Image 1 (spheres, rainbow, N blue to C red):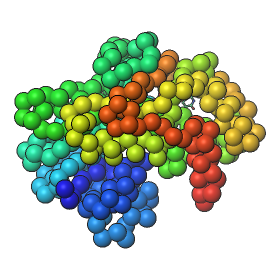
Image 2: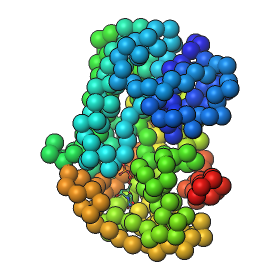
Image 3: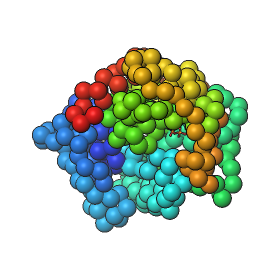
Image 4: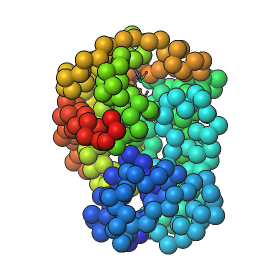
Length: 322
Ligand code: UDP
């Protein structure tokens, strides 16, 4: 195995994956629409190529996938606000471009490592969820579910591709990964949004009553799992949850961040509707069962939320311009 393609390689998780693969002496090609800020430190590596372009470009993808041995497909839109404001784009990238890439991979008989999501479980009330648990989604009139549906369809496609054409794959579902380089502060997910507010001394915008929960996994732990899964023969053609089981309410998350960073901001509550308008529905609880990961690759998270938040806060405090 020599050359690996990472779509979304300049993003939060992709950048860490490229770095790990380079450490393991692979030749790595990253394709991403984003600028190369998160991978600037890799640019001088002779085994690394960065192409700033869209994975929706079929000719580009065909050309780039001619001589690779494995593809990590991460390029996707994964920002809840965008599920509501630009669902068309979410489906163009997360569904149509992904399936296209899987087809090209199949033509070239390339192993596919697919970044799916905990969103596939929707709002199934029976937490913790193991990999075989039900998906419980709302109506197609609720835009939020376009992301979950796109990722689930991709998972189906990979299972079918293996069943009928014997293309090897691994699917992993991240449960709220965080750490340095996660999004631009103030955008995307809850931790960078809160962090920007804390760093600027603004009020913290906890949505709803703040009792909705998430579990969080630190980026180093998450990437360790992905790399182990990608190269494990035993894990082939299966799906895995990657996360932790300690549940935090969003109010508790805000209080924890305030304490760890010694911040002064006030914690406020805002209605979901004010932020997202119509077409949004929150997920009340999200908790994975990660025993399959332990069984297959002997993995368990090492970094607590407190420790991970400390590192993340430090990273952003030291960044210029904040
Ligand atoms: N959230 C919040 N305030 C914010 C941003 C997010 O309370 O400013 C909440 C959001 O409503 C959800 C949770 O944090 O309940 C996690 O949201 P995130 O955007 O990280 O994505 P999700 O886990 O829902 O995919």
